[in-house]
Amino acid sequence: MKLIELNLKPTSNPRIKQLFPNTVKVFSMTKRRGRALIINNKNFIERPDLCREGSDADVENMSAMLKYLKFDVVTHTDLKSEV
Image 1: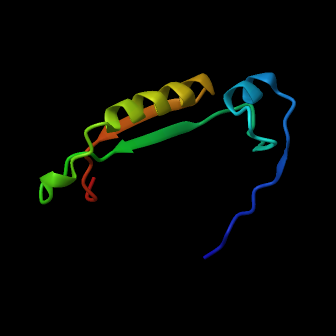
Image 2: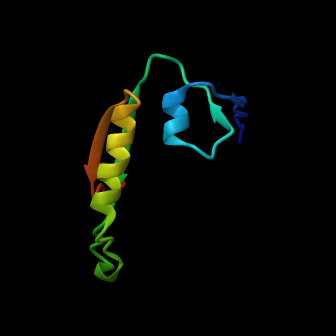
């Protein structure tokens, strides 16, 4: 397994500081953003007791944050491993 080490450096970007006020160092992203994939597996056929009721709110919040950062966000719910 090959690990990738991220270079962290202090940020001066006020928008990033607003999002992460307690963060001294952040990963420096390129201006061009890609696609962000959110997979929300909340219902489990074999284990209905594991249903994750509040996960839709988490997906909405995460999607809004990623869109604010200019990512193309794609969301899928309850995907099976074959998909």
